[in-house]
Length: 189
Image 1 (cartoon, rainbow, N blue to C red):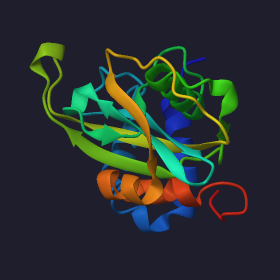
Image 2 (cartoon, one colour):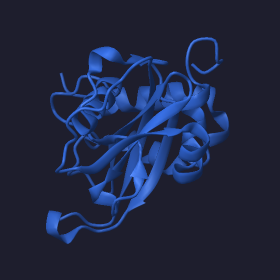
Image 3 (tube, rainbow, N blue to C red):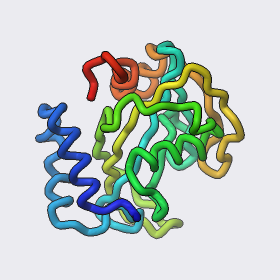
């Protein structure tokens, strides 16, 4: 069964229980979700849901990719939902495996809940017939002792590599710190 607006709202509510300081920042998507408009579809405007995957290896580094859609900037693997996705967590694992060739059997979710939720503006993409819109991005953290980068998804990314946490946080931003501190015994739920 595909991901529903109810699933998305429930996941956001669970996230906000642990991150109450972000309620105001996420007030606009909360309001949009109340109206229920199939936010799992990438054709829903002005907002739809995306997922991200922060993969931490040996508590020392995180996997980043250069996304073509964003001009080659470094980001965590991630992307749009598909009809076959059953949960947001599953969608994040799928995106991680598709973009980096990482074997999904070798990664473990650090938590069943997202470690970040971001609401961001996306410029118009006339070639894709997309107006200016917003992504509500649910980011999950995964851990792996050993995880080898495989065949990258060249239609989406140009490179995938491991970065030390401090460098990744400097390049990508504070969501990286959430990956560093996620996992059993970290207090992150």
